[in-house]
Image 1 (cartoon, rainbow, N blue to C red):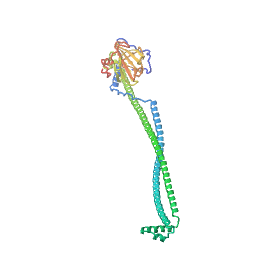
Image 2 (image 1 turned 90 degrees about the horizontal axis):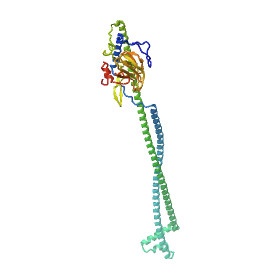
Image 3 (image 1 turned 180 degrees about the vertical axis):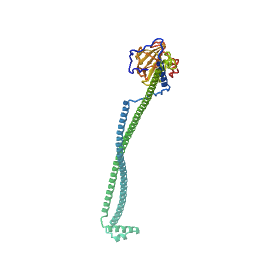
Image 4 (image 1 turned 45 degrees about the vertical axis):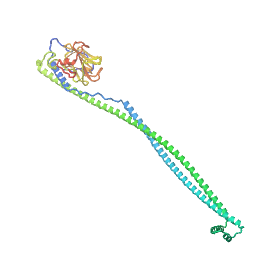
Length: 459
């Protein structure tokens, strides 16, 4: 089989041979048809592995925004942590001051108590002194009265002898001893003692008042320190709450970034798996094509060596699958079946395969159209010798042109992803009525009836 052109829309080749009515094709053509059909069967024996649907792929902008949000939250958390550290230091300072103020207040209370006790002692001493002065005054008054009544010249002996009894005698003796021993103005000394006691009372009272003032000052300082401590504690609690809130925002931003990064990693892994599977499929297709070419070369050599002795027959003769003259349009996995869906007819069967997978003419016939086609991108229409039109859509490249004669199993195009396509595949249709764009039938049972089995779709 000669290699067709491998670029874009093909043009009719000059000198192309035309079929002669009633003449059978050469044995070489029949043999090549068999080789190509056999290769097509080999390619389709192993079902293709379905690639899972792609996971969501976050954009670089989304990941960048999440990273920026995380950085902003981290910066805010850092700022709040600095404020918390400052608040902690202030709280510690205010706490120490409040504690010192409380200690000073307790010391002032203690000093007031001591001053009160000293004042009480001074008052007690004053009362005792007053009582002693009164008693002395009474004794002196009695002595003076007695002296006056006795003429003022009463000697000590006379005063004693004049006593009416032992008790008075003892009292007068004590008074005389007291007056004789001191030889000074007893009343003056008593006045000095009274002044001293009054001064002591005044000093104790002043000390007590001073301590009371100190207590009031300490109590006010303590109250102010307690208020400042309460204010600082409230400010610290507020900053702590803000810190917790920003830390939650940072955690949420980190989680979002991790989720997006995880989604990106999952998508990259899926893309790598998909690329590996597509590469494996392309390698398998290329290997099958090489094997088919080798078989074709061997068939040509055998035909050249055997001349016309090879088996012959019509277009549906030996070499075609099942001996019917029909072959599978391409190798691959059936991904969508014929039928109505969403109010529209899917008028063919989709066979998923890597871009570049060979597409073969299902039956011998004449190319009615090859090139651009609405919805298909590129498509090839062949009117077979049986009158049915077969359609090959979404092809990447085609190697035939309108009016060209093709045989079953010839490579006419390669699988593509052009037009309204969601993935590389061949869209294959059959119009038994011979119409180009109408009269669709389900291709699977149509092929099955001719000995070609594509699998899937219950055909």
